[in-house]
View (cartoon, rainbow, N blue to C red):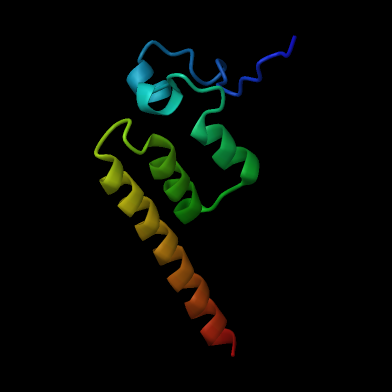
Length: 89
């Protein structure tokens, strides 16, 4: 029998206001919460936001809008990296 892994940490989600601490669009039906991935992988703001929008796509708002927002954050991160690269050249 396999044990189910859960990274939805009750230590951080034990407050009564679950809309703030454990919103359904991030945790319902999941074993790993996006914030746990963000913290474990030490993602910067742009990548963390992209992950957030991908993880909730279609769960909170329109799926297409969520995915477009994730792309927006990724493209912004790419532009910053390209700018830094050009400044070094």
